[in-house]
Length: 354
Length: 144
Image (cartoon, rainbow over all chains, first blue to last red; front, side):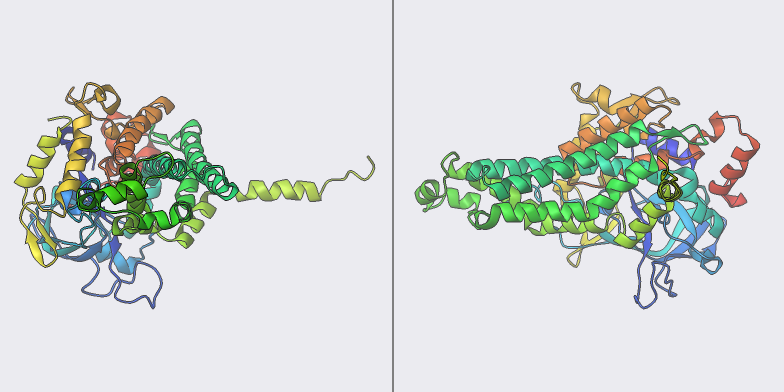
């Protein structure tokens, strides 16, 4: 693993990852419903390495990555019967037998004017099929050891670091949605309306909470047992929880702010077509030319209405797994006793004689 | 090699043919496929920032092993300042993609840079360290 880290650092490789096994049925809860033939497992060991077969999801960026890392989510808990499924490895995306199955592309081949985000930032999501894929021994980081697999994420604190990266990405996303909303209200001239002010305030609040958690995670960081400065777990877990509901709400606010203006978004071709003069006259607002208004609202639509934007909302709802899992994660690390003791101290106060 | 350029990243994708299926068809080159090429360009632009004089010092650091400049998301943070330095780098990338590419390379880089594995060779192992190292690094004797 140390060698692999140095290898990707020195070669500056892009990685995707897939952590979750596909479920054939949801009748048994959890992601470790490991029906034969579906979940990724070891089928054979050879002198060269292990042969793995099965399917994993969800390799975001898979087609555009150099390598794929395969391990298990932090909250996943394997039992001894899962040992054929207990794996951690990384291999090149071009390894024979490895197949990436893409969803539809949300890059519709349109111009940046028509589809400003989808035409730039389609990162793709894939199911990954492992058709008897050979993983060389030097790329096998863990095999069959259930206890060690369960302990890995906790021992390395890796999720505190990836959640810090997530908080950073969330901040950039908040800033972008907020900036778009401010431009929308400026364009429509409705920034002074009380309900608009209230909604803008909510976007600002989410943005600043995200920023505060990111900064607090740095300020409260501690050296772990390996001498690695680790972001405060509670302060990175909090925005991860928050964003599952806060981002969909931010997008809902964009929809409320934009309303019918989302439907007044002719394409770039229309600006060059026979209705050009009408469009430029009728779609202008008091302070914004029609073209600038439409360009802005096509961007807002790419956040709040298009397939690309809808996928972003879905991504944020489930990127950090499901809400119950995250609620349990925060409860696990929260200093619960401290809170209860404070109340017990109050209940035990003897201040009658004062 | 050290920090790559966008051109090097795209060449790497082309050199390593992978089996990608989209809409019932095998994608021969992800860097030219209409449904994927612009995402590849976006990642390439992130790599290019590592060499842009305006960004270079915020995006890269000197590798302790090769002495070349490498991406800052590979930094193993030792101080709070390291965490802030790494976050500035990550925020620069996230703002470039408007926060719309959650899986920019820094996401996995910080994951693999975390944890004791990278430090095993560079620290004196206490008995406690050795136990936990054994618990999370390669567990099969055949893998070492």
